[in-house]
Image 1 (tube, rainbow, N blue to C red):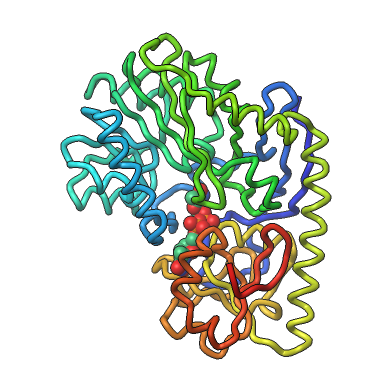
Image 2: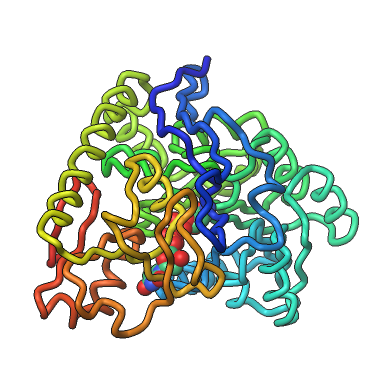
Length: 395
Ligand code: DWN
């Protein structure tokens, strides 16, 4: 049974950045629920994929050094540990991972044609299609079974999870490996990072829920890694249950125990989380309103999907955060969805004469602190809502 625990109000599509501010931009009710049987956390209203992932999807994985480095390290590990003949990536985006492999050894799946074009231009075979059972069948007929399937920050974006894993199970060879990584529910609850919820993020995985879910597709987790990326993610290493050549590592049960101890299998944990979210909103607004009274200049850094949830849930407008800076060409000179806050092109001197900078991309805090030493030296401060709203100038 699905039980709702958090109401984030009306939210626009997080990655549709309008050219002009529209008071009547379409918004959808965003409520978050917990399934008492499967222990899966998800959003209650689903938006059709085509509305969100199309030819103008602006998010590019290669825009951050941290992500490029993470994909490079993983590619080295995959080559050494699993030596796949073919690697298939579901949601290959602009190729941040596949760029580390030979063109003959990888297949990308990317329904956003503007992104698929980037990898195609570099000579990588890319299917401009949504991941589903029909596509898996087509691929099996063309390429045979695949020995390594990888997907980062994609499976949680697809509503029909049954179809997702049925398709994977069909295409993956008997001894094949599936690696997926997505934001961790545990880290989200610990950090009160309620901005991990937006219309694209249909699910927020825990080890408990993934393990429960994939069993029926003859799949099991045999290893995992806690990652710092995207505010705390988990990388799951998965195999077919009847592949007895690979042993399940202790870390899997250990992580499940940690999650249980934290209460990720209990509804009451999420009710408590919702209370903390309300408090977080009050505190953040209090900080921003006081800075406004003092006539301080405040801008946002990183026009993220996450920031869209915060701005719309807390009703933060241009009077509290003047602009956002971002490096993504597709976002520049557009507006933060649902708000009258313009996104401007990031330049080296963007933070000059600014007093406070709200970290929309708080998940890249280290990378940003490294880049903005001058701002900090001059007394500038960053604002974050993680884990509790505050301003700071040291990590
Ligand atoms: O799952 C998803 C995650 C992985 O990426 C998607 N549904 C959408 C997207 O979410 P996000 O927008 O919250 O992701 P990021 O990676 O936190 O976005 C970072 C943004 O900040 C980008 O627009 C690039 C920008 N940025 C910048 O302007 N300067 C980032 C860094 C590190 C910088 O120095």
